[in-house]
Amino acid sequence: MEKTYMLEIAGTTRHLPIIPITEKLSIASFVILGDTELVTAVAPLLAAKLPEVDVVITAEAKGIPLIHEVSRVLKMKKYYVARKSTKPYMQTPLINEVESITTQKKQVLCLDGADASEIAGKRVAIIDDVISTGKSLQAIEDLVIQAGGIVVARAAILAEGEAAERSDIVFLQELPLFSHEIE
Image (cartoon, rainbow, N blue to C red; front, side):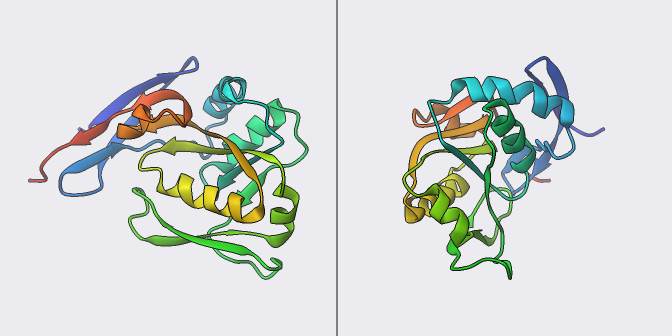
């Protein structure tokens, strides 16, 4: 029988599979892609916790449905996505590398130069589904700063492990990490 963690948030319940990611650590796998009910339930709660912002940004891909709904709740006309690779349409993209707990390898985050110019001078909220080590969050923040944006909020649905102790992030609920020994 698969081990799961029961998450109750914003009137929804999800049974998250517990997945080993190292010999001694497992995470509850929280995937919001395709989960319209959960995304629409949490977005207004997260939006309400944000200070006044002009712009919202996330990393490709799991944060996209959330940022779409948050930007809709905030009545924004546009949101921004740091892509995982440069695209042919990008002109003078800003590029940063990150190694997050879920990818376990280096990946690139890119911000189109046109988007960067729109972010310059704006109050920016970085939004993600889960903040764990904060490495992805920092990589996006570095891109925002390179673009000339002013980071005024770092937000997520869940803060995993030690991230829940951070005073510089906004989140709706804590998500525990699970220690174990692989047999």
